Image (tube, rainbow, N blue to C red):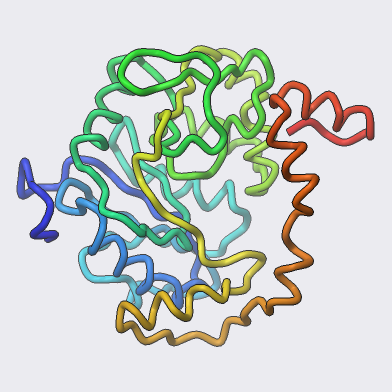
Length: 274
């Protein structure tokens, strides 16, 4: 239990699902360390979903509820199987390579769950990346689903209506497809007024893996925390990262455009809207 967090109860109240797979065991100790350090875990029941060729239950961090249902057929099918095993109406979803860098206010998390439940919403992103469109009460914005908001179903940390998320996963999108397409489905449009995002980050985190390789900053991070990394995973080189990053001018221009204009320009170049 996190002694520096106030605890309203000694029993878990909210489900936190970490979506992973069986070959990502090297990430779990890192994710677990920063959750324990910077997240009010006493308010959550933590699930780790990790389908794959091998059952890695023995590697699951202590206190986590391990979910395994065989071979990892696809991102959507595996995530759907994990959600089927959870009974709660709302679930906080995070990916396995997210590390939480600052202490998370349990009051703000509780307010987010309450807001989504009382509003009858289906999605509440806990970081404004991207932000919302229409300011509402309490520090939350509505996402303009009818207007084709970009990345409306981003896989940043978010609270989901569990059954609604399962409906979107029936399309069997890849993670990238899910982020740009799931918010444009008929199911999403039926709930066009039920998608929300916080106007400030409720959880401060970063991801440590891109295209299967570690970011170099992780070396310093684990050294500062006194962690031992047991992994054969490759690392990005400085040269590779330079190629990976968006050109500064392109990034500046994109930051000045609204999502609608950004998508109009993509259509001009025969690219699919985000």
